[in-house]
Length: 405
Image (tube, rainbow, N blue to C red; front, side, top):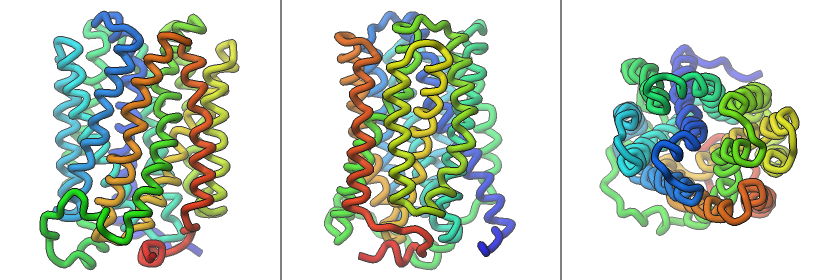
């Protein structure tokens, strides 16, 4: 029988879940407004891919913030990221041209992904081993809720006098509330107990000079392969649906809303799944469905067939995260956890996240969105093979055990 959560753990669970909601909102917001933004700013498909790639550079630069959680503490970094994301999301709505839009959104991504990664470290350290996967899964599932909310309201917000800018103005209202609520957040017990004194400033290559270098590189490669598929599969679906299936903004919003709602029960169960059957078997199921969903989402005809396929694509893009977040937090000791996580995810994995949209945008100009994105469906299959070959099973083990070499 799993031990019940303490009152603080319950409050922390809610806080981290709500904070992660905005990762989903922001991710889908760019996807939803991209055709409208292209039209207003006069940019091509290839330039749209370059725009997404530039904005996603912020997910790499987030490394510089996340690694500080091993020095400053988890609480201080989480507080800074929430405040920074709120400010730059608001400023995005005032962007006078595509260059300013890109810069503000890139900086907002630095803080957003910093918040997300730090939340994963906090969740792994503060909740019991037997339910760690479930907690990570539910927190990540709230990103899907953010996507559902975004998909539902964006078609309406695009009709407002400020058009796509309204999407960012509306997005900051709950963030201000969240920034206030973080006052009761504590430092994690593991960090407080195991890191007695603030760490000295470490060189950027510190973790790569430790015995954990191999694990960082292995996880980084798996993150990279995964992102090549999941990032593009969702980001460019509206472009595909509008250009190659003649969908309207309303039809796209409806399809994404229905698909996200249909995917959500599975997304919420994904963390529980890896607690029950293990990280490796869970990865085989989740990554397989992600690959199939993205391939069919860019292949089928008809609104309902595409909506059904998109549900599996959204599920996969969300459900791969509890698997990789679990591994990225479980396989490293407390004093290296944030640094190792940010190396694997932000510096190595996000290379695929940043550069692949640029390649897909260029390919789409020659082949079309469907053929270009379908090519990425093979990468989750390669990733899950590497999980079985390279990573240990960590289900139901304490962090001190899973981090041991």
